[in-house]
Image (tube, rainbow, N blue to C red):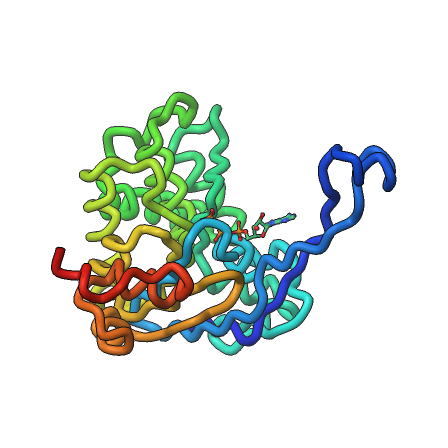
Amino acid sequence: MIRLHALHKAFQTRGGSGSLAARFGRKGPARTVVAVDRLDLDAPNGRITGLLGPNGAGKTTSLRMLAGLFPPDQGAIEVDGVDVLRSPREALSRMGILGDAHGLYPRLTARENIVYFARLQDLPMEQAQARAESLAELLDMRAILDRRAEGFSQGERMKTALARALVHDPANIVLDEPTNGLDVVATRALREVLRHLRSPAGGAKCIVFSSHIMQEVEQLCDQVVVMSHGRSVATGTVDGLLAQTGRQRFEDAFVDLAFPEAAQPRQLESA
Ligand SMILES: Nc1ncnc2c1ncn2[C@@H]1O[C@H](COP(=O)(O)OP(=O)(O)OP(=O)(O)O)[C@@H](O)[C@H]1O
């Protein structure tokens, strides 16, 4: 179970090299970028929760805070009731995180990458090896298990990184745009794995994933949190969000919710 409450994060950054920069020195004037303004998200066990937002909405920043990479300025983050800010190690041990950069060790084989992470999670060697075997089965990656990670395709890297994230059998799984760069077969395979992990047979995991791809969210998610300009602007099932906006197509509902200023007139819907 993952809970984000009233998250806020701003970054201090510098402007460009125009005339203002000349006045403020080479780096330009200081600016504040509000990446996450107010995000609320409740993700239960046995459900897939999609964090859906356009480019720059604040999805990655939110998931990085959930992963404990940096703290929010305000707000609360809990994993199974454990406060990520107060008890980061305990909270992290309850999560498997697939970030936007997969960061595999290129000189290690897929198996060695997985086992190495299992050992970092304090799994005994025998158990680490057994987990590598069962994850290779689940993720259909036997053919690459004993190949060095250097030269892996995007899909092979994703599978290895996902196996690594799942090695300690966490109750919560967090994925940042996991299908980026994957072909249709790899995307379908990932979808099946996530459905399995959500089911009672797969451990009824709490799964949170970010995406800006409507079809992906529509096909996979039990509930959707729509994020726009750093805020959660709507939460519900796909059907619930369609009903809320009075739309028939999820893409139209999303545009209404995320960009109310740019929403298309309703009569174009059947065009
Ligand atoms: N370290 C940083 N310094 C300054 N600004 C940042 C930093 N990280 C993120 N931002 C800004 O915060 C906003 C949200 O970025 P974020 O990467 O979280 O969005 P996103 O929803 O994941 O977008 P995308 O779908 O394009 O990956 C953007 O305007 C981005 O430029």
